Image 1 (tube, rainbow, N blue to C red):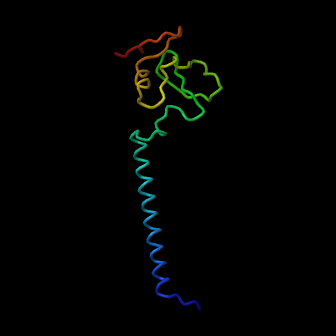
Image 2 (cartoon, rainbow, N blue to C red; image 1 turned 180 degrees about the vertical axis):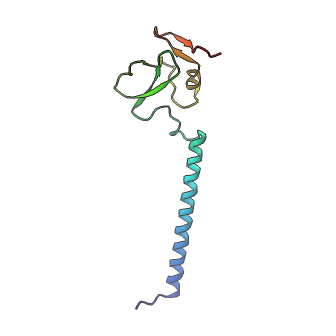
Image 3 (cartoon, one colour; image 1 turned 120 degrees about the horizontal axis):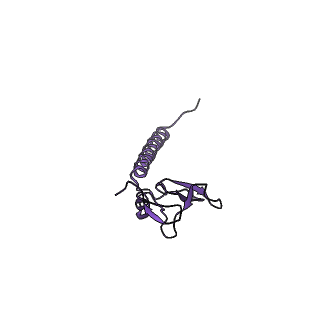
Length: 115
């Protein structure tokens, strides 16, 4: 049989409380991170494409996709014009390309039906 002194019991209870506090803090931090990601505050969560990818747009429409670096854009898609590539959701170029596109000749045009 092992006998535990009062001091050891106190330390054990203290460690459990610290562990619970740490777990609660971790859960709270995770909740904040999730909410920040949903609001667009996270620099990683709102990237247009992931690492190792680049964005492409549909020809004649406002659709877009991400293509692995080193691969060609699929048929019906083209790269964004140089200097006009959206990097983050809701950045200047992401908003612009919601109402503009590139036609079959490569010219930038307003999307039909957009003001």
